[in-house]
Length: 251
Image 1 (cartoon, rainbow, N blue to C red):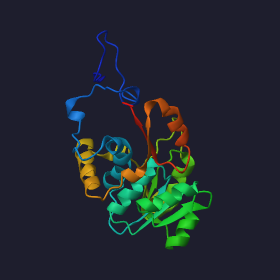
Image 2: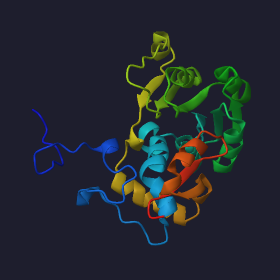
Image 3: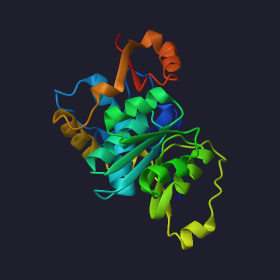
């Protein structure tokens, strides 16, 4: 049965959701049950991170992988979402958090969010992790969106470990995973989209964690720019010196 579209124009044209609506818009049409009221103390320049970057990363830890306290974790890709995953692992009580990235500046920044070790992705990542821990990790998170890094995350696991794919790979991307690892190693491979969560509940909880000083958001906002500088902002995002650029649509 075909589902009725959520929104249509007066002439019946379907209004696409997700990326086709709301990006860089001053106004957006939303259903009331999709909105979350933020505490006044949470400024817009950090509150905007909660509904995408933070819910995706922290949610993947708690609702997707559901990591246990004391577990070991590897995070491959330490941009905005990867930094949120690292924070989630810290909040969940991971005993070791290994950040993996090709950019040394991002690796250094990852320590701010809770990484206990760093590995440059140009190395043999699974071997480097085993050298640090003596074994693979209990949980690996992929926040890049490529077949290579997804396969690296799976290879970095210890037996019975879980790899969670958070980065969205391009359409048509295929993975090659050793079948024996699923049987003899009992490894698991799962996906997590937008944190696998309940957005209204999770965003409100994350806002409280921020106000308690337990979730770092200000540190993730490298710069706030006027909308007229959006192209420069995208260019800056390519640098490892940037975690998130926030565009002020009113400026």
